[in-house]
Length: 458
Ligand code: HEM
Image (tube, rainbow, N blue to C red):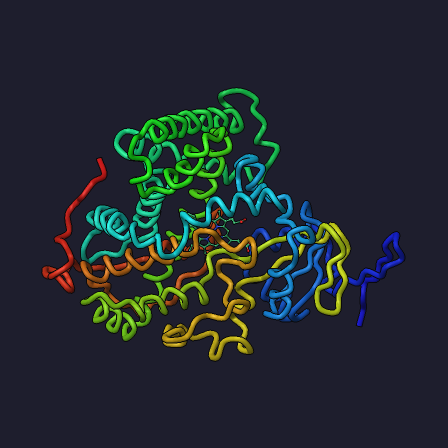
């Protein structure tokens, strides 16, 4: 077997796993235009671990075996960093994506209690209200993409539950943020455009929108700090500010704004795309759809939870997690030199027959009474960098799907499944998760479910 052997200054042998010898440029191009296809092809050819050279990113070791993934996710934070995440440089120094080691751990300690699973239930009503409001406009009997509704829902849910925005502040942020994040996504891929060459250039427009965003967040922070009943509020900004106000700690508004924007960018499109995939999958699995409808008649959620897990397994919206070796890193039989990127290929692990029986089938029953495996089911990554919003996303999907099933009959289809299409942050169904629906005259479980009407948040 061909192995690349490098020698460190300390005469320690570094060994990279073998991989394709194709030029960086070509690998990068394939990755950009056909990420899922090219990574499948590489895994098929090179197996559970291989090295690939990529433009900008450099030498990259890709893993997809749970044992190797475990080694990556449990590595010390001094050994593996997040690497220079381009999202981090756009979002600012106060973003979790920009932090490593002690600063990262400290920031996670601040954010974890507000995002704890048990706390999440307090957002149930708010999510249902937003889902009902957005689905109000669904046409009956004609095909339409659901992703726009889900994007609007997840945006408003984050603005209300995380930012605590309401009234005109909510309206202003709702108007500004889709434009800010859409432009930001383009600037991430072409960093030169990020420079501010005046108000008519992309960098200039981004800087102006970012200034407006900082102003709006500044107003929210001032309102919270002046609020005598801050500790009664349930939004995540209030939960973050309460201990700081008690400790009379200095508040860095700019970094707080970076972190709120991070939560929005990380949590908005990902959850909306997973919801669109749920619609896409369920329309093609009518028996499962019927069983979920029956479940939605009361308060149980076992099958819905399992279905969400299976949607994440079969249609993961984030393709990979990335780390960067800062010190020599032992990965299985290989010893990687500092500077090597380490990527876990989420979809390759999820599609592997060795780790998921009948992996190609959409079968939520595999997760009924059975928790997904920590290192073979990794839609939220893992270890110290595991997605901080996983419980939030789980609750949001659960409530939105429950609301949809209670109020709408989803018409099954035998059309081929939608292709996976990359939309800047996440892989979404290429046609947007097309649905055909009929409104139910009597909502399922109508004893509890309120009638479908707009319940705006002001
Ligand atoms: C279906 C929805 C979502 C998916 C599939 C998803 C997936 C991921 C993945 C794969 C990572 C990288 C983990 C790693 O490197 O090991 C991540 C990180 C992150 N996610 Fe999510 N996410 C979702 C929703 C959310 C939500 C709702 C929020 C917050 C409101 C959020 C906030 C974050 C943050 C802040 C990080 C960075 C964590 C760190 O670096 O310490 N995500 N997410």
